[in-house]
Amino acid sequence: MTARLHRLANGLTVAVEPMAGVETLSVGLYADVGARSEPQDLSGLAHMVEHMLFKGAGPRDAKAIAEDIEDVGGSLNAWTARDHTVFHARLLAPDLPLGVEMIADLVRRPHLDADELEREKGVVLAELGEARDTPDDIIFDHLQSAAFPGQSLGRPVLGAEGTIAAIDVAALRDWTTTRYRPARLVLAAAGKVDEDALLRLAEDRFGDMAAGAPPGDQAGRFGGGRHHDRRRFDQLHVALAFPGLGHAHPDVFALSLYAAAAGGGMSSRLFQQLREERGLAYSIYAWTQSYAETGLFGVYCAAARPQAAEALALTRDILARTAETLSEAELTRAKAQARAGLLMGLEGVGARCDHLARQIQIHGRIVPPAETVAQIDAVTLAQARAAGQAALAGGEALATVGGKLAKAA
Image 1 (tube, rainbow, N blue to C red):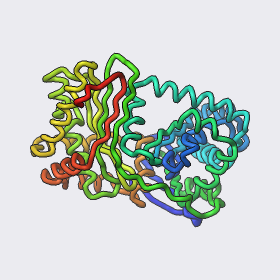
Image 2: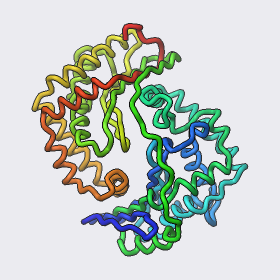
Image 3: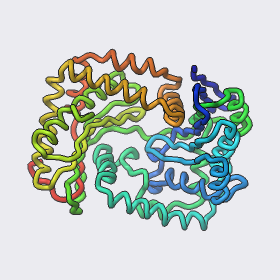
Image 4: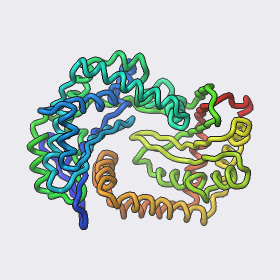
């Protein structure tokens, strides 16, 4: 069934994609602001706001929020990224009004109690500590800071002890009133959902929001650098990053296909040569991450400490050789992986809702999956090689966790 897009008079976007053969739905409010929008002295604010909204909103306290959604067998959740924040409900079809009501209350009618904030800071600090004790988690924050030094894109979503301590109720309220503005909000639903009912609920719950857009974000620029976390673990975790591409860049699919061929699966060059042929690493893979104006192409590797420097040197060599000698067979395989990953990922109502909203935030319109598949299929061998070569020529960021890497690396 066809997805459709509407905009309320105040600028808020409403998107709906009915799906045949399902009895459930997913509905979410997607805010086009995240950790990169924070002031430096309040790093972690967006994530803290997400936590605090669940401590009470509208007529409900924290317990009532949990009970009311679970009384109907549903779930209510949220997540914060560097460039967006999501409030999301999964429900049976008749409970759409409850889902929209609760999401609207979270964003528009939060309690934001000072005592609750102090308690929740302890929870967030525990989350931060858990992340720091997980090498294959924290290394990506280290890599982000090395790639975007001194920039909002380089700061961690969770923040730091000092900046978390500095957050007060006034900062929370300022964030909800200035950042959650209709022009950068998408209310999306997918599954067994009635389009007219969703539009009525959107108008009822969000139609009276004052129009306007929040302040813009600092533009990101790849800087490159190094971040070494010397704490000792059983393995040395290594992450490399090179300049990537923004969401709308014409070569974004070419770069993602190069990355897939280099390290996107068990058949990739990195996996076959580092793990299968030489036994240098247990985990090795490549990836791409796009933001509005920039991005990253990266590789992660976990290896025994004595082998880490060799693994890193071989990784750099394989990346360079892949950019020069990528074959048609490898590109065809990467395209098949990309097509299948996209289409398989869209079979659930939650994934379909998320994809629908993010396409609107990124491109300003609903992008049919068939259009994306066509863009993937259109990438030529020359384009994929060139995208890899351009990324590798743009500088490097390196992060390690787990011990000392040989100086030659």
